Length: 185
Image: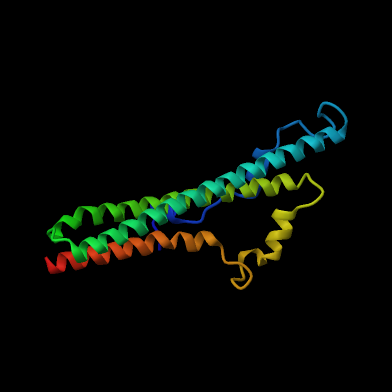
């Protein structure tokens, strides 16, 4: 069972969609009160929707870039450590600090990915709420329904869960190397 602090950091909490909806729409502004005919209001909602979808996509692209950076860096470092371990005459204790730093870096990688996942989740919730004012809801209802609402792993397995495991795998490898290093020292 998670403690209160652990639940805040590790839990899957999200605000109620009604709270997000209430914060999304400007009070007193609707198709009747918006300057100009009603179609201008719909055009404004559509433009905001397009802009917000683009912003959500950029967050996803930044997340992928961060993931690629950490994956490439860790692969290079892991390879260098293994080559150095096997071929260098340096004392093994010289690997302790770099391995500890790599474990810390893997923790940072995990939290960065988690933060991007949370930000993307919030952005796509807002996208879905914007779709409530549009004629169709391709993301919020149709796509999510087509993916079994995330409950059926044969239809959809969120990439975020898989990508967040990668820093853990590298951290485990570094910890095993560190343990081997300390056991043979």
